[in-house]
Image 1 (cartoon, rainbow, N blue to C red):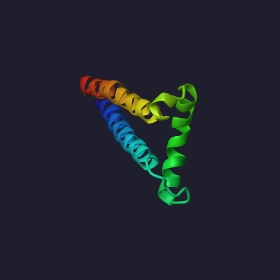
Image 2 (cartoon, helix red, strand yellow):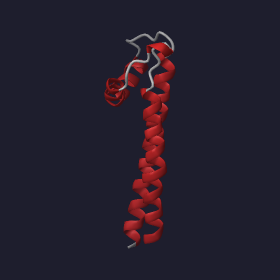
Image 3 (cartoon, rainbow, N blue to C red):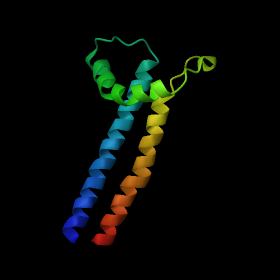
Length: 101
């Protein structure tokens, strides 16, 4: 059973690392959106290509809040979802691995 415990622990750690990295990519995309970035810059293109598949559906569902200056709340919602998954799923996997090991 210890092999399954190590496997679950490894999956939890990799998932936690991936979610943490994606959260920082989302933050980078939000910060870059505050300025007028060059759309041909490789970093800007990477951030857009990686984050747009997640941000676009949320943007479509949220109403435009023109009263607040057109603020895009989709990065905030994605970050909150990442925090929830890290707090719930990753901790659950680590706890399950600890009980199996």
